[in-house]
Image 1 (cartoon, one colour):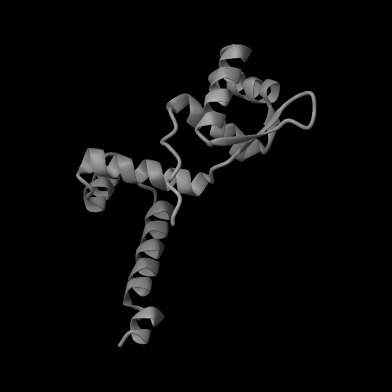
Image 2: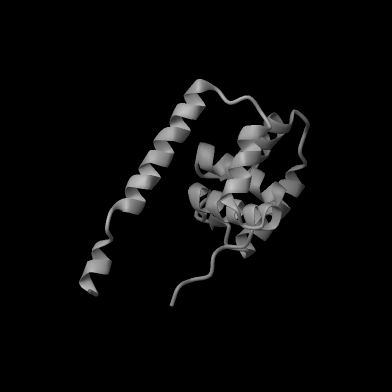
Length: 141
């Protein structure tokens, strides 16, 4: 039985997850300080605490209660969360079409030569992966 994917984080939850992914486990105070620096405006401590409590209920974070100051850590991986959000975005905005997403992204802004080279390498890697026979397919033949 596979476990259900975590719920989609809100914008505020995602901002806290970014802090935890970048800086590792942290107290509410440390997270709040990072948020205030990022936003360049003071963020209320109780607001940060309440969001973390909601995130704990949603299993987006874990809390270590061993010390007096609770330490929070991300319970979801950055890459998996990005994939989940991107899938939902592509489905909702581009009707599930990766081609439409890429065409919009590349057509709406200047793309550097380095970025284009990275995109070509990625496409080449995908082509190689798609052309390599899957060993599982051979087992069932």
